Image (cartoon, rainbow, N blue to C red; front, side, top):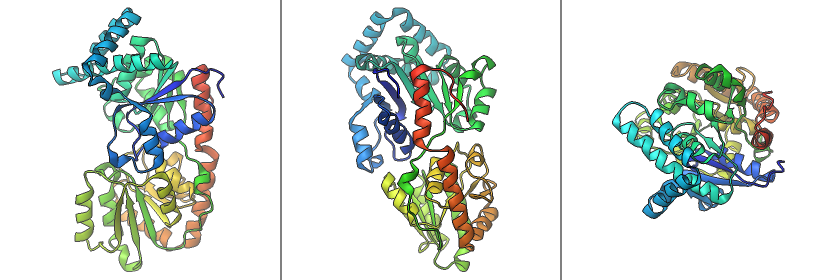
Length: 410
């Protein structure tokens, strides 16, 4: 527990989202250690994300930058305050915004919007007495954090997830963000290796492995898997590979007539996916239920036999940690940091991304062998308890917030 009574702040693009419960858990775990955490978000989330009391409470106590910036009085006042408080920092931040802008007029305009937002955020943080800002998702909201830090002198850090930012590191100036941050929390060894490849070696000491984590106690006392119920949890976006999953289970309905896939999540692709399921004759085997809160997801995991995540690109999916904490075997893709969590043949099966036949075989292999499924589930829970608990990871984060010194990457 830190002895510094000044609060820290968390910032992301949208908070709280039903798909980012790991950030809410991390904030709660830090607060449980006695650290005051102010939550900030660039945009206000849609009501579809406020799926439980936890989300509604966080939304009610979060500062929304764009909401405040819509007031001309607030926006102009924040910039005058920033200029008066630290004139050198104000102009250095403006220069930094221009220097790090991607090519093109549209990109430059967005960079100036981020600069405008940075002043509003800086004023809010000064009023709250915030000593440090931590950002999740190192894209536009992290640009705001970087500019705010230069403008105000309040240090910042960020959690680097990937993989999408690794597709356009120059656009988001990941090198500059790493160079200016006090530290970077990388969610996996793979993530840290990408950060090392994209930054100057003199800054590698700032890169710490801090996993996203779960509370295994939330998923305790689940019965061993014994049936043919599948679960998917995630955004209904192409990157999650759900069309591949629907194709993969179609031939399995003959072998397992009671096979049932529950899909938790929502998104723009939902209608197309529902249509695909119907046209493939899977109407009685697939149930789309929309977003659910953390308690409802835990209940769904307790009532499933196999968790499947056929993504094409991921960091280390927290939903896999949740499934493993619930002692459920998992079938997922062999990408990025996933093998650091799921050991093939031990806690689940890894398949090549986009390989429908391999996914079909893996699902069938586990559903046909309840004992193997139960053994994998038990191994998965042990793995999460050993290295992916939110309390342990929050303690390591708190150490960095308190001292900005190096933490063990064990």
